[in-house]
Length: 95
Image 1 (cartoon, rainbow, N blue to C red):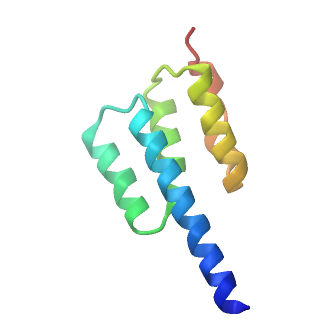
Image 2 (cartoon, rainbow, N blue to C red; image 1 turned 90 degrees about the horizontal axis):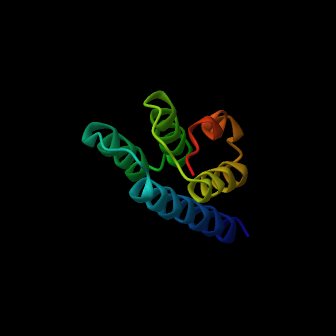
């Protein structure tokens, strides 16, 4: 049973990693240093920290985001249990 639990945890982590990577690709971030940092965190299994870092930089740089992208971020934050990551990002919505 422990073995299947470990496998499940690894699959969840891989799913988060892939989905955060996809959000990063679609993000408005343009700083190569920030993008590299987020990818580095993902490569070391720090999916939640990578996600929070990405969201923080989007907010700090006041980068415009669409409703669709925000919805994806909110869904990811809810699933990962990191709702604070997306607080106030609605201020950046564009039509």
